[in-house]
Length: 98
Length: 243
Image (cartoon, rainbow over all chains, first blue to last red; front, top):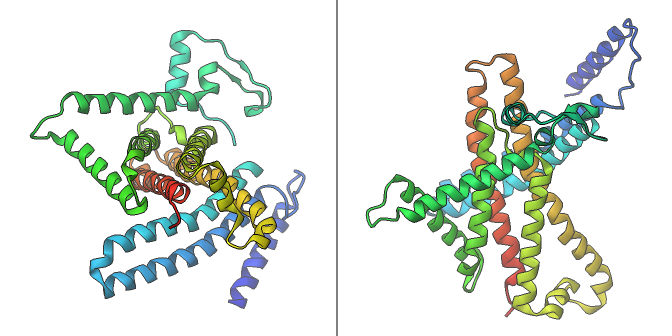
């Protein structure tokens, strides 16, 4: 994990360093589209973990008690929509930043 | 967000010969006609009209042995009834017309994104915010009608009287933020899906957008379901008596 993070960080730096040659004004890493894209990535990662956990629990519930499948499915979809809403807020914010 | 008017609006602009001019603070001053500026309203009106026409068609051709369209509509109404009865304890079916109307409106709006030359009305925040505000007004009105004005608002005070000064502002904030979450969820999902399908279309117009459009079909249905379900849940929270 640490190795991965270090590599990712280095790649980010490299992208900035290679772009230095261009005559355009270089934006900092923490303004504009960089922030929009990065925040969307972070939100999506968290949402993925959360939704995976929710679906896992729902699958276990259905496997243990197949008769409750309908109720579990409805509840799961509502829960997934509520979790996903957080990413959607970030997406809207990303649109707004652009 | 940059503005992309639907092909329908552009075509209508040309056919009707409408003049294009810049709109203050919108789309960086690009020249747009009225129809292109208020593209979302055009599409939402079209969706509402389609919903009304289809429903009227089904209503007119009601038969004892149902055709395919009638069967679909019967399934939808049955499903909505079941959902309402699951969530609202007593005579919830009086809210069926409103909830069904919202469901049909949102459904047709979502699906207009899959028809070429149209864009989904719900991919604009104005439409979803309007829907969410209508739902907000509806369930507050029915909460007050069902429980009485004072009792409805006292409900936000919380169970313990000395916590009321703390809880009342929080509950009101929660109530108001429902508008935001209810509208932004629908808008963000449909807009995001539409944008991704558009980017895929830009990459390769043949075959590549098809999986995304299939996902759009799925998400449109899921988001309609979620919007309707949340409407029902808010309504049931507002009108339920605490025995």
